[in-house]
Structure formats: structure tokens, C-alpha cells
Amino acid sequence: MGAQTGWQKSCRRAGFSLRINQSYADNRMSKSLPTRREDYSLWYNELVKRAGLAENSAVRGCMVVKPYGWAIWELMQRALDDMFKETGHENAAFPLFIPKSFLSKEAAHVEGFAKECAVVTHYRLKASPDGKGVIVDPEAKLEEELIVRPTSETVIWSTYKNWIQSYRDLPLLINQWANVVRWEMRTRLFLRTTEFYWQEGHTAHATHQEGQEETRRMLDVYADFAENWMALPVVKGTKTANERFAGALETYCIEALMQDGKALQAGTSHDLGQNFAKAFDVQFATKEGGLEHVWGTSWGVSTRLIGGMIMAHSDDEGLVLPPRLAPIQVVVVPIYKTGQLDELSARIRPLVAQLKALGIRVKYDDRDTERPGFKFAEWELKGVPVRLAIGARDLDQDVLEVARRDTKEKFQLPLPGFAERIQALLTEIQANIYQKALTFREANTRRADTWTEFQRLLDEEPGFVLAHWDGTPETEQRIKDETKATIRCLSLDVASEDAAPGVCILTGQPSARRVHFARAY
RNA sequence: CGGGGUGUAGCGUAGCCCGGUAUCGCGCCUGCUUUGGGAGCAGGAGGCCGCAAGUUCGAAUCUUGCCACCCCGACCA
Image (cartoon, rainbow, N blue to C red; front, side, top):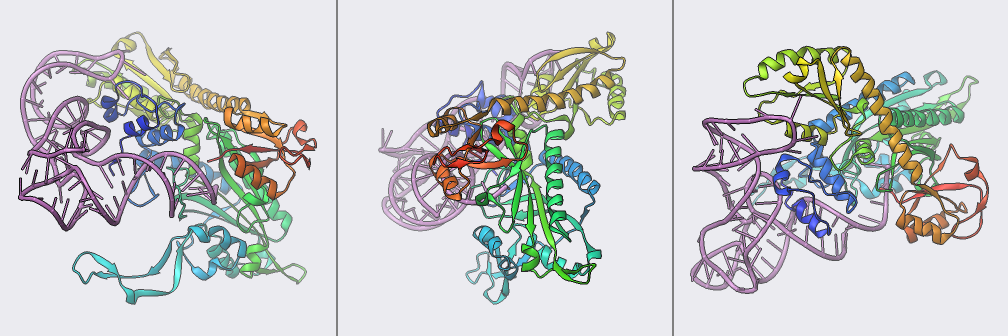
């Protein structure tokens, strides 16, 4: 769509110089990303575009997810979906449109979403009387406006009313993969777009305890996915009342730390209590013959995860993808002299087949139109975990060259048994990326005991700050107003040192425990 | 929604203050030479200067309005 402001210009305005040879690099998708120290947002934005993940669409705040970006999302979907199935959930699909009246049934819920809804008011266009283009046909006004779903609790609960009569219908464990629209004031590729893709689970249970267990179970699924698939260490915890989901009794979340020291909420799981059941009158006959409202939960993760993964692992050369979520895990680049490609390919293809036989996602880059150096740089930018460079010279010596993306190391590998070695290397890279992110998070999680220290840390050493807080929404708000830091969560796995009582950083009032503060995306 | 910035070829730009029909680089096309870290040389194609009105003999340039995008803030997954 023609980014009309050049990123060079933006960089210059932001006051920093660029890396090498940029005009050349611009088109060849090269090294010349903004260096992130100076402006992390710009770096991230440019990285997403250059790596071919997504770009801004012509529609305000929306994005076009390009094939490479979508491939990552598909891998995420597949892994998560398997985990949902294992925990007993089924997929279904609910309407995109929500009658306006549905939204007003749960008071807190309206409050939370009313300000950011796209509303459908008409169902027809007609030719403009002045002969230019089309206008909305005033005759085609809807009796009741439709909201483009910002989340599906309301349509789903109005449906559940019909699905649930007896305790025999419970628990009802449904998930939906969908796109939703929230008219946010400010957008950012993947992290906050007007339209985004996600999954939302909506369950109904006979008892509050079952609902709470479900909420926690799905939180654990998310944490498991973040850590073992995305290689992203997360803090599991509960939100404060201020940050709680509109209509929930309790909101659990996983919080991750990005490389610029800002936190990112990566997933949420809500205990809805009986709020939605009451709002939509969903009752069931108990075994004992009574009539009770069901207990609900909802939980979701979105394409934001892609953004989080990029911001957590990537470097100035481009993306660094964890092997389990890399669309291409191994790229093979042939090194050859003119006219010798076919001959070399014939020798390389069996090797590629060996990798495929082990279930490795491998690409043989036999493009004759680009040179090896260009291919190296391009695949690095796209975050392919392992690159193999193979020339006739190597094959004659029964070796090949391996380069790993995470450490940038290069070494030679003997051909016999190389496929198994590569497979093991992918596992090692996955673990290394996680460890690196974990080390980073630990190094950037600090404790503050005084207000001045708290402020200093946020400004000078951004990251999580563990601090005492008196437990009141008012204090939380004051801290936010003065420092832009929010309480990310009250962590569930709290170290004994942090579980001990203390005094509030701002008011000096008694505090039961430390909580995680940070500036956040 | 507020503050700031920018729209010129596929991408990045010069020109604008001081009006005279658009500069350069990359990419693209053709040919030759190259190919173990983003190739070299030669030739070539490509533009309603964001849109609309106005001023003027004449507008990329001046005036007004609109639109779009980027950054920052408030809001949020």
C-alpha cells in the first residue's frame, strides 16, 4: 500500500543513523533495520514488514497478514487446537454480527466494549444521485443495529441458553477460531490491530469450583504453549480489579517481557462466575431437581502472540523463530558455479529427503536468480533456525556447512547421520532461545522498596519491578498516572521473599505481598 | 480523539523558501561476465508530483479544503 513516509525519514527524525548502505538495502530486504536501541517500535514495525509477515491494509488500523506470517499463525493454531482437544474442548462457529441489544445485557461488559465497536446500521448501498460512486441507501436502515463482534460472550451465551437445560448438558466446553473487531484508538501490527484473529473458549459448568478449575487449566495450557512452543517465559498471575475483563469475577493472565523492557499480556483466562448466565438466563436442572444458573469461563489468545514472539527473540539481523513454530526449520542453499546447479541439485535432493523423512520442515532454495549471499541474508531476516550451505566441494569431502540463526555459529557437519544431528540441533536451538529469554527476564526483574527507586528503575532499567502495593484501586491508578506503569499481575508462583508483607511503595500502607509492575504494550 | 511529521516511478529520495513540465540510487527488463556472505559492466523501460478547487500566460513548487500513512499520548488482547 505504499508506505509513503519513508522509514529512512522516520529514522532520521527519530534522531539516529542507520546501518550500512541503506538505499540499496531497502529493496533487497537487507541488514538496514533501524538499530533497536534508539527506537524499538520503529525497529519492530520495520522488521514485521521486511520479514514478510504483515503490512498495513488500506483499512484504518487493520493489517494484511502475508503468507509467511499466516504460516506462523497456522502452526500456532494447530498446536493450541491439539491442546484444547486434549483438554476436552470442541470447536464451533458463532455469528460475526451481534444485535446491539445483546451487548447491553451484562452491565460491566457493555462498559468495557461500548467504546470500541464497529456498528452496522444499513444493509444496502445505491448509486449516488450525483452520479459519482455509491452512497448508503437511507431506505435500508436496520431495525436494530448490528455490532461486529469485539468478543463473542454475548452471542454465545444467548445460544447456550438453548443448549443447556440439565446438569447432563454440562460441562459445555466450546472453542471458536475467529476474527474480531475492536475500534482501538491506536494500532500496532500484530500487537493491537482493529481486526485480529484469535481463539476464544467459552465454557459452562455446574459449579463454581469446576469453572475455576477450568479457568486455571486453560491458563496452564497457555503458559505451556508460550514456554514450550514460543520459547517465551511467562509470569502466570491474576489481574487487579482495574485490569479485569469486563464481566469477569477473576482474570488470570500470562505476562511476558519484551527486549525493550516493556511487558506484554500474552493470554487471558476468565472466571465469569454466573454473570453471563444471569444476564442471558442460562439455568440448568440439578440432579436434586433444583434450578440453578451455570458457571462460565472464557479464555483467549490472539495473533498478538506472533508480535510477542518477534519482540522477545529477534535481533538486528531479523527474526529469530523458535524451531517448533518456524514455517521453515531448515533452509538448504546450494553453492555452485554457472551451469552446475542441476548436477548439484541431484546430489542435494536426497539429503533434503532425509530431513523431510524426520518430519523437519525444510526448504531447498534452488532459485537460480539470487546469489548465495543474498539468500543467506534473506533467510536470516525471516528467522529460519538452521541453514545448510552445500557445494560440490563439501559433498566431495562428505560434509556440509551448518549455520544456526540463534547464535550465528557456523560449523561443518559430516554427512553420515547429519539429519539426526540437525533434528537434535533444532531441539537445542528451541531450548537455547527459551533460556536466553528467561535469562533476560530474570536479569530485568528487580525489586523496589522506595518510591524514588521505583521511578528510577522504570526509567533507567526497564523491566518488571516487584514492589509492594496497598491493594487499593486508587493507589494503583495514582501509580499509573505518575509513572505509566501498571500492575501486570499478582503472580501465582510467588517467591517466599515476595510473598512476605511489607509497605506500599507509594502510600506506606501495609501490603500483603509484592506484585509485578511494568510499563506495557 | 489530541500533539507532531510526511505524501514525487515498485521502493527510497532531490527539487518546493525564490513557479517555467521532474533529480539521483535501488529494484525491474536485455546482454555479457560472475556465484562459499546482500555481484560487476553496458544498454533500456517506467511518473495524472496523494486528491480537489483556487491564484497565474504557466503550479510538484503559492493558497484553501479533503484524504492517507507514520511517530508520541490517552484506550486496549
